[in-house]
Length: 189
Ligand SMILES: CC(C)(COP(=O)(O)OP(=O)(O)OC[C@H]1O[C@@H](n2cnc3c(N)ncnc32)[C@H](O)[C@@H]1OP(=O)(O)O)[C@@H](O)C(=O)NCCC(=O)NCCS
Image (tube, rainbow, N blue to C red; front, side, top):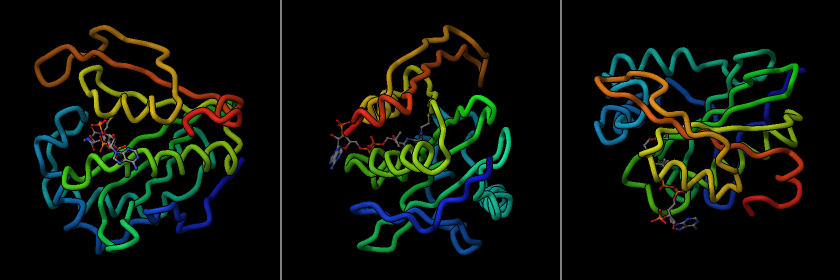
């Protein structure tokens, strides 16, 4: 299978588009922050590492094999401001399993933007890429993140206790998922 969304994808308030080199400062503005990195595996990022990461994302706009990724910048339509990023990863092509992720600038938390963008990702994954199941993972303490998953109609499938030792402490992980049939039946809407 190969799937590339027709970009940009527009939702009510957002535009999901490919990253460009011109996005480095806007992405650095949130990826440098300790509060944003708190529950991410990468710590706060330097300007240079953000530039390298964005360079590596150029061309990541197709799902065409295990581990292939679509990384999208999320722009607020009304202001054209880049407010966050989302990802859709093909984890297992044979079994049509995908994973979503999201990171938003704290100035734009609390408006439902992450949920709105992630909903568009689920639609891409199911209707576009023909996925059967899409999951998301987060630190159990990352309440804001798993609340997004619950708003999306995803079910908590697992709570992995102390599954990895990260930054000096054992991590607890939640796994949430939604099936294509559940999505079609209206989960999360
Ligand atoms: C995870 C993260 C994206 C969640 O952001 P968020 O702003 O809480 O999520 P949403 O954009 O969906 O907004 C939901 C909030 O907006 C409120 N809201 C306001 N208008 C809304 C609308 N139109 N639709 C939905 N929710 C709305 C909701 O009530 C909710 O607030 P609450 O949590 O107080 O109930 C954010 O915390 C983040 O970027 N964290 C740092 C990176 C990170 O940890 N990423 C996840 C890694 S697993």
